[in-house]
Image 1 (cartoon, rainbow, N blue to C red):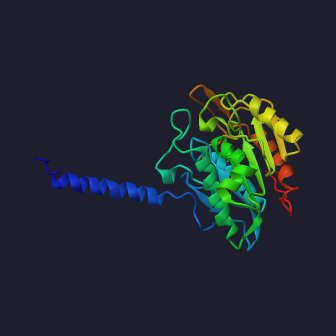
Image 2 (cartoon, rainbow, N blue to C red; image 1 turned 180 degrees about the horizontal axis):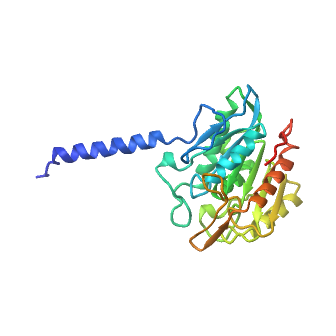
Image 3 (cartoon, rainbow, N blue to C red; image 1 turned 180 degrees about the vertical axis):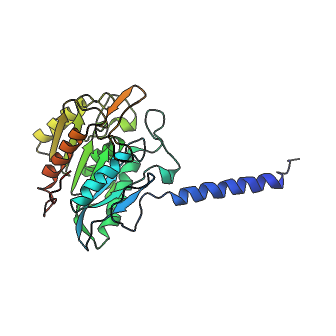
Length: 288
C-alpha cells in the first residue's frame, strides 16, 4: 500500500513553490515604464529615456554570461545622455539563473539571448517615444554572441520574420567561431545583413579575437556591412566596472579582466562613428 504524504510536507512544498514563482515573477526581462537615468542601487533590468516626447533612437543592451554588471549602466548613461532610450535586458533572472558561463553552466542558449533582444525590439517599436527604424543592439561577451546571430540574415528571418530588424549591432568581445560541436561555439555566420561592428581586445585570453578578425575580414571582402576594431593592451571586459561605475581589475577562473576607462572611452567614440551613418539624425555629441 502506498504511503500517504504527510499534510505538513504538502504545505511546505506548496509554500516553496509559491516563493519560487513569486521570485521569478518579480524578475523581469525588462521593465515597460521608462524613467530618467539614475544608477540603481541593485543590478536589475532597466528602461531609461531622455527628457522629452521623442521619438528617440533606442539601444538594447545584452549582458554577458555572468549576468547584469556595472558596465551596463555606464553604457546606458552614455546613450541616454546622447539622446537614446536605453533598455537593459535581464536574460537570466526570469529563468531562475544568476550565472550562465560555458562550458558547464550555459543552460540559457545564445539563441535565447537573441530572441530576448528581438522581444525587446518588438516592444520598443510599439512605444510612441521610440523611432522604430533606429533601434540598435549592443551586446557584451555572451550578449555579443547573440548580437552576431542577430546580424545574420537567415537567423533574423527565422526568429523575427521578414523585413527590417535592428538598425545595427555592436558586439563587444564576443566568442565568434571556435572548434567544437557545442552550439555556443559558432556565432559569426556567413550572411551578415545588419550593419555590424566588433570591438575586440588584443589581450583577451577568454574569447580570443583571432577568429572574429578572420571572419570579419572575409565578410567585408564579400561586401557585407562588417567593421571591427582591435584595441591594443585590452583584455576581455575592457569596460569592466562595478555598480558605482569605477573601473576594476579582477580574475574569473584563469582569465584576467582589466577595466580601462581610456579604452572604454575610445570604444564609445568608435560606436558613435559607426552608428552615425546608419542613424539619421546622428547621435548628439556628449562629453564622456
